[in-house]
Length: 326
Picture 1 (spheres, one colour):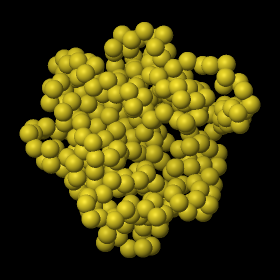
Picture 2 (cartoon, rainbow, N blue to C red):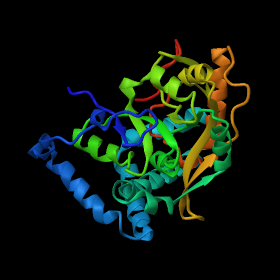
Picture 3 (cartoon, rainbow, N blue to C red):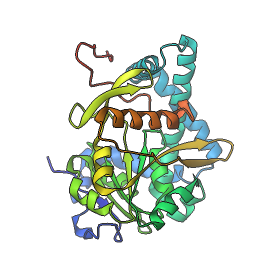
Picture 4 (tube, helix red, strand yellow):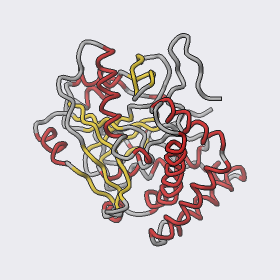
């Protein structure tokens, strides 16, 4: 199978040639991609209908997923039970329903990212505490924005697109959708490079972060035991990636927690920038993992309904602890 390539704007923090990025192939016109083309074509008019209608249809989609996908519903319930063992069953159910409604509404908003210009999208995005990022970049320091999997993660990436950004993505199995969605993360107005996760250029990123660049890093996934250690995530032991501590140590970049949520009151996607992690990293991997999870917990608590609860975040288990997902 052909390996996924990076996505990048012509102007990018690493000065990588545009020839190296993911391209469109004529094979994407073959019949096995026709259903994907239907999705792409239908997404265009959706991106231009009023928010009220997108929210309504998104809510219906979210409730449909909740009622017809017991697998994802069960994963979400299991994660919440493990994180909040004292939460009542009715509270868990209400949280899961709200989560799927937000998920459906965000799915209906994704076409905005695919079809609308960056200028148009910035009117739907807002950054809170952007001065924290600016202050460190002005000191000629690299910045690691540490974020969890909120439902609107991609809107967070779009909101900070005025900065020089380095990020990663998990490739879609569908090559056409991978190309189509990936190119929306590297618009012509951006200064960005997005690497496929399986081709993570550790040394290049460390070098880049010795300059005033930003690494937009999702730090809550369970990627197995490699480069990880177990630490509490809310009330449950979780395999926690500590690569971020190594990158911060070698590059001297500052680690700043952030998260994106949709605000009904503001009718915008809000990226909240938290205070930088002080005295991080330490020489203790366990302490670093706990600091990472503590910062992610605070971000997630800002709106529990918009965290990606349907991910298998407790897939890797400590010895003797049963696999929680049926």
